[in-house]
Length: 273
Image (cartoon, rainbow, N blue to C red; front, side, top):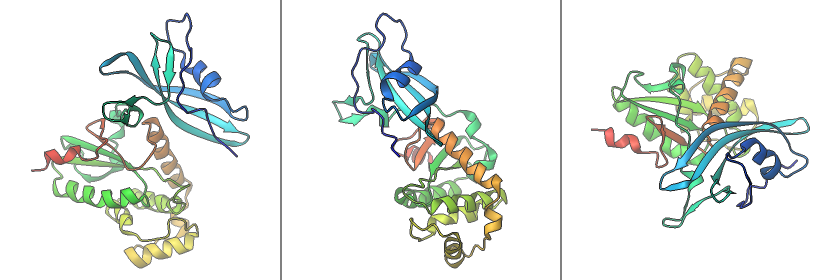
């Protein structure tokens, strides 16, 4: 099974004689060139002019793709210069060597400030932090404990909203862990759910009984398979992943601060006094 797309740098005539770039046509006829992959839907998320580059725009979108019975929604971005009628999947800033696709994200809708996702701080705090993360991502394991500590120390300044983004292909254990965390959060036990960032476990572990035994042994949290395997918790994690995809989240931890993508993941720190 392969999902390989033509996502290398593209420079081609796209809109000859047309006034507007046709995203759907571009995805179906230029970007996805593997005949085994069916493009079921293309959804534009945002269209954003590039600052200082008046002829360029970034189009952010999701693709619903299928190979046989396997389906997947993939976030993607394309840079388009309608003046020169060219497009590129990557755009490198030669001044600093950075790829702009790693620095551009849509503006976060206020609907993401959902109280059921609030894990620390006060909902009416002036500054909002939204994090998409995996409890076994090495970078998340180093980042989340400090973030939680800072927000809990300044609850009147920050509200921290948490969204599950399990990277199951890299850390299969996260499939069970995120359901367990979602169960705890639904019981009003967000503090216990966040303790999972202290868990030391083989990220490739898939045996549910062994995973829950490690949780009990290390964290003192006794969970039963029948508690965490209810459809509502699986669905809740899936909904979190969909919301992450809509925000063009490709890796973890991805952080938004006051509605804007925070590439450095530390914008909140200047408000700590």
